[in-house]
Image (tube, rainbow, N blue to C red):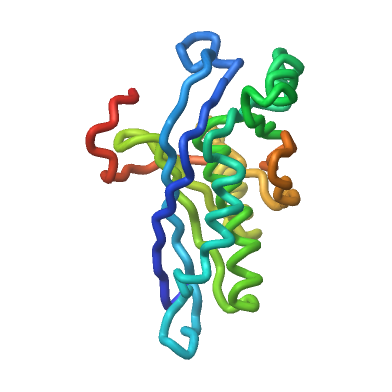
Length: 207
């Protein structure tokens, strides 16, 4: 629990997806969104300017996120057409980003969280942290990611054991930070989870 929180909305860019496992819907086809991410920063002590996070120091973070998401093609590492996408990347037709744990708005939220968490920790020398992240496809669809601490995980485990009728309990994978790929590399992008709503996307038509 943090005494202070601040938020920042960051444009991630235009991102194309293919969810090959979604054979029941049009998401199996290549489609795109203008992604935005809202980040919640937490701290117990403010800096000398009385800020939680200096938003002017987020340019490097934005550059890292743009490299992953802006004008890129994101596919899962187990996509059966991965070699085709790699060939297109090699020809300079797409900028390929391979998501090791699969694609989707939940996975995007996890990736943003992990990249931002590392950046904020370094920027503030551990004084601040990323509480959670929400990524928006558009005004009707979003997902959030937060890493649970061990106490929270234990509480969830206890609840499920005491109430066996509860189904569909999702466990969240944590902590698999991977290095940010260098510019131009079709490098794999690391690990993600959840949902909420935003309202800054008037005029968009994606469903």
